[in-house]
Length: 225
Image (cartoon, rainbow, N blue to C red):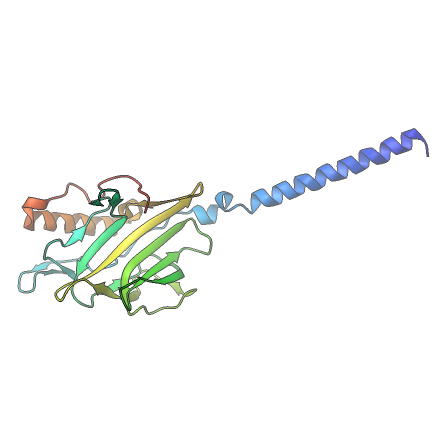
């Protein structure tokens, strides 16, 4: 075989190897979650997890399904302990208040809360592998199984136990990006109705508890949950 033929064959072999490597790189890149637009789409929260539509009824200190007995609600980012901040909104509710789905998705996980029998933390994503996770903490009587699709407005379960007069539940939005998880204020994802109802809730809260008012329900930026 001539040297020229050997060079041609070696050149073809190198070309084939290079093309194969390029195809592999493109496949790996195209399959990366961070580059998949679908997993990066932020959720739109269109329904409040608890009925906060009001009005206030003094007969039972209620506002929708909220219980207007202090503390009423915990804003996002409120300092709870020295290095712990509220990762979401905590709503204090009527006993057995329905907890509603805030945006459509798929139930990714249902996790038992330790030392609270029958109390669950429910994780919902827009699709498997999505970077955003909606977390409903302190939910009793969960109506769905893992892997079940849910729609905004459906009843997920009932609010968890706080005391003999009140229940409670938490809404949290997590973003997984750059190998880190951060909790973000739910108001960043609310539609106009969701935002307006929380604005009115804050106004009612400040009017009835003037010694513990908040300027906003988002007290800080992203935090580590």
